[in-house]
Length: 122
Image (cartoon, rainbow, N blue to C red; front, side, top):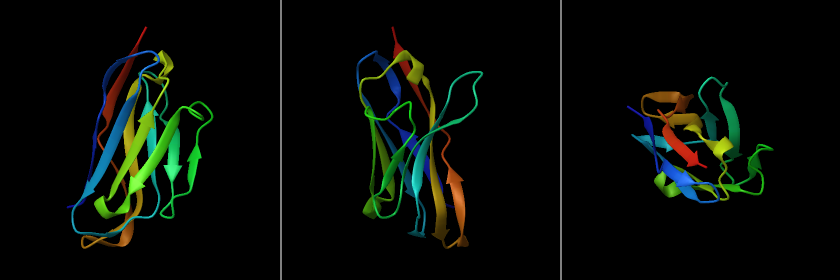
C-alpha cells in the first residue's frame, strides 16, 4: 500500500530553523503536485505550500520569504525548509501528494501523511 510519512518535526526556539521531509513509499508510478499543510490546536487546517511535478512553487502569505518547498522525484520525497520560525508556526504539519498513480491506485489518488509536530518556543 502507498503511504506518506513525515519526519523532521521537533522543538525549536523562535528564529530557528527546521527541515521537514515527507517520503512516499510503495509501488508508485507517478505523483503530480505535492504540498504541505498545517493545523494548530483549535484551528482549521491551513495550506502552507505546493510544488508541482515540474518544480513550480506557491506559498501561503504567512510563510512567504521564510519557508522553501522542494522535492526529489527520484525518491518520491518532498521537503519543507523552515527558517525564521515564529511561535505562530507551531502546528502539526501534514504533507499531501496529489494524483498518485500506483499499482493499487491506477487512476490516481490523493494521499495525506499522518503529520509531524513542530513547536516553536518563546
